[in-house]
Length: 178
Image (tube, rainbow, N blue to C red):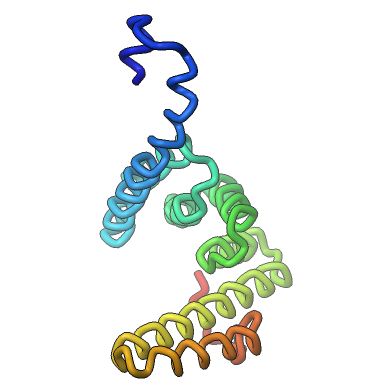
């Protein structure tokens, strides 16, 4: 389409759907880059992770996972201001992302803002606990097979109604603090 319009072989309106058609591919490439950055993070290659994630965030400023992972890389590089900024942006994009809250808390600890750090770390623990419970429910549904699917779906829906956040609260003293 782009080549046709550039050669004046088609009208500009042909490009109206161009962005919509490209969006799934762009998202897949961003997700692949985040996956590569996770490998860098796991191997303590903080600079490479930060560079890769910065490119993703530059292309998609609302990619919450990339922002959260970027903030984690910045913390490890002791770029606390940049880490806090990326974590704040990650939480603004997706408030249910535990990593963003965790890095916010870690940055606040470094700044000696202990009350704010405790709140952020507690939120991270609560969100991680809820995420873990949902994952276990999905895994149980897969193990039980199709006969149990309606029963599991009913249970999961009831659980979600009862637990807007999380049933159990994990004591902050069990948090991994840096």
